[in-house]
Length: 311
Ligand SMILES: [Mn+2]
Image (cartoon, rainbow, N blue to C red; front, side, top):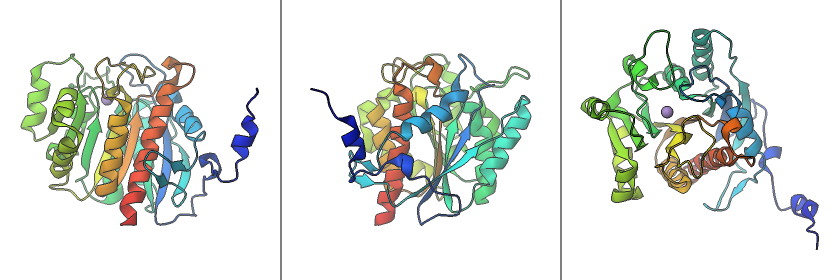
């Protein structure tokens, strides 16, 4: 027997995210602005993340406005596609364009940046600091890598944005969750911890348990700040779930561990925005599994903000 798919889609009780995009001047209490950053010139391994934003938006549009897992409706939030940052062949000009775009996101919007390789987080954070008039964002980073190597002039790549931000951020207000890639020496861990960062490896996360880790992480990053910014590298998720990224990771967190963490934090702590980076659809499977995971993380971020606002 043939299943009537049209009937399912036409179910009048279902509201689709694809039909919910609002113009920029139609904000409500909770408004989220999506900004695409199709930049992968700083790729360290395999290119393709420039297509990430477009595919993430496509997969996002295949969902309804009800995140059934968390029993939260996204209907009351304004979702606005703020468009794409102008990426040009001059890397530094592109970074300036990203910083300018991040600094000028309308104040009513919580920005969601879609990458792009992870180097975009440097100009995004500089722009965010300008936008909120502070240099004290609490940063929660999900990544299997430290991204803390010294840049070599002319050979810049996405693995040192956390180092190049040293003039801009306070590492005491940084927490990294999901470290596991064995491509560093202990010096990276030691130096980041010496500077005040809180680091939770995949092993730490599972051994201590999610709630204990999130408690410690949020206390740490909010000690000297008044809000959290998430930077989520999709390579923090295990390659079995997220094959579509530049550097696949055989010892990653499971998708739900990040989705639920983002939801828990956003539903209990003040949040300034997020980026999600390193999704590379050309390297993904035919069903865009990795972009679907990114979409679920974004929906959990929005749902967490909605839940927090309801109290
Ligand atoms: Mn990274």
